[in-house]
Figure 1: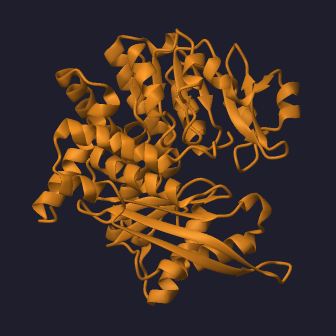
Figure 2: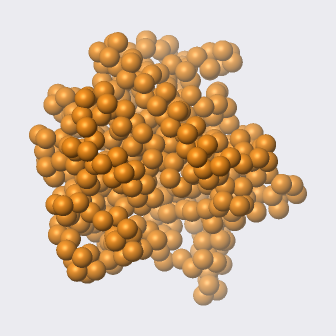
Length: 429
């Protein structure tokens, strides 16, 4: 899933905001406040590499808005990371926490690096260096990081250890996505993917569609996709293909089986970055197609669960007329131009910051448990997650029907209204 270098995620996020700001008749001061991050940090992270050379990695942290609570958002390690991507993601996190109605704001971080070509020790040094640069500006009461693309619970634990070393105390609520047993929450691994399917389940009910009679195509084969596929399959649906990035070839492939993929079999031939061994996949009877073929499949449901900017003005026309629902597991996978086409075709879109809010909701649960020093059983976590996701979905769906507006617009209206009101109540605007 290569990124389009001409695409600017932040410009897209601002375009989405401007549209809803017009719908809400927001005053100019509120628009100016919410259109850009409150604060952003750029810094160098010097790392002595395993070969003895020193390399400087560029790191970022954007804090978009904290009117409703401490900032919340992941840290990405990606060779194509840009400050504009981080800005966009921090804004989307503000709307995500607001539409989920949890007392947090939005933030995002990143480092320009490729973990595929870094040893564990080098990655640890980057994690600790990132914290050293930003330790005074983040924390459990200010801004709470979490894992994101190509970061894991181990990375979070290194960051937590460095933060606690600097501040000389224990702050388990500083960061979420930690390993279970070290302050992590049960259910967190499943949360984002399950959350996508909780909202999909509600959409299918609303449309009067039996999930057992549906098929789906998924872009991505990382953590979100794994658990979305698992729960959707348990509901009786059939995934016929997945698309993922191949590290050896530096391009993506789609792996297809008309009678449905076998999740466990594919996971057994998948690397830790979500890449499927193409030779072993062929041996298992999977048809190997170009990476973009996932979007062309004759299915009922599309689940983009990889990167932003995947359903565009060009690619949207490849979507089968059979597709009834797009459930956005990724952040920003659909451009505004493509949204217009989906709306015209009456495709039901479950927008990203609603569909994939399960991760941040469970991160909030993790922080609550850490602060109480009392942890819930997995069943309780998932029950609470289901209740939160269902409540958020119904609020968006009800508004969309009441105002006769697109689901994405309804989700934005709810989220932006909540944040704007919080800013107004604080006297900021």
